[in-house]
Length: 342
Ligand SMILES: Cc1cc2nc3c(=O)[nH]c(=O)nc-3n(C[C@H](O)[C@H](O)[C@H](O)COP(=O)(O)OP(=O)(O)OC[C@H]3O[C@@H](n4cnc5c(N)ncnc54)[C@H](O)[C@@H]3O)c2cc1C
Image (tube, rainbow, N blue to C red; front, side):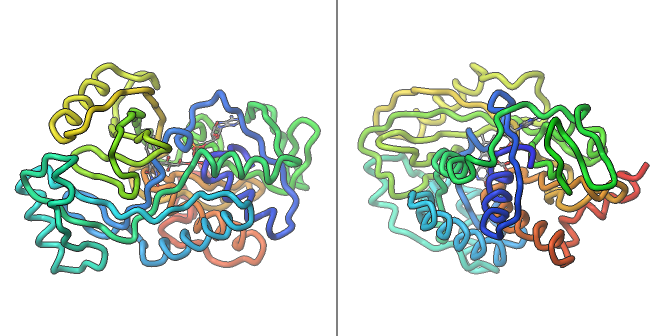
């Protein structure tokens, strides 16, 4: 496995559980999305507040998987945390109110008077249920500890890889298959670079807010997520066009303006994070084996939804390799067979 972000960690966890031998190679100096993500699973999305793709299947699978991981590793990583939506405009409030009575099982009304102590709520509030917070820092740490005998800290250079009839060789390691879970780095991989990746830069601030309850996620035109102790993750940006993966002063100022407008409590910025999301034009994952080189596989393209997508699709990929079961057609890289074969 190349990469130990969300996807590589889930792949290694399931392989380990199934007793399938593997090595996982990760270079901590290479840019990662997981290490800066807020870790929220939110079943609805967008201005129209519609349910996210396949959520009725993905959500129960993800909850079971994170809870099983938590139990196996004896480390708390998943917490149910309803999102309190502080409507940022009249239009968003109307959108929420409409969705309350149309094709919705996740939204509900709430009593916003309790929030008035902490936030300005001129357009009212609502609640999104069945939302979860995943402690990704703990998840990556525990995931790495679990498979420490199989873990190699190194940079994987594709040009050092030799494909042969038995599979693939890299340095002194021989494997039947190699699965790329290296996030946005796959864009430089000659075997998979024709997949329609579109990197998306995301920044966030870690902010100390004394007195704000860590029981909920708060969402307005920014999202405030309990991090640890009295620290909160505040973000984010979605930049499709950028020239570097560095923290920007513009983002910081934008967040401070937004916090000043909505938050009644004093706060202090303590850290500024940046990551690149492995997004793509279709907003669907890239899962499967290369049509021409079946010893090469990929589980990637998780975009903005790695927390809910990664457990389900890493398991699908393993089942596909082991038992020949089908990969969800919308996620299967078979759809790019022509592109990948030329
Ligand atoms: C600011 C921000 C907020 C986000 N919030 C959320 C959220 O709340 N909920 C959600 O579901 N998703 C969120 N996401 C998206 C989520 O982070 C991604 O979908 C997910 O983390 C992708 O995981 P991955 O393992 O595929 O890729 P990555 O996390 O990028 O992992 C790739 C790994 O591969 C390693 N690597 C890369 N190249 C090499 C190489 N050549 N050799 C060795 N190792 C290599 C990297 O070091 C890294 O560890 C957010 C993303 C950002 C940037």
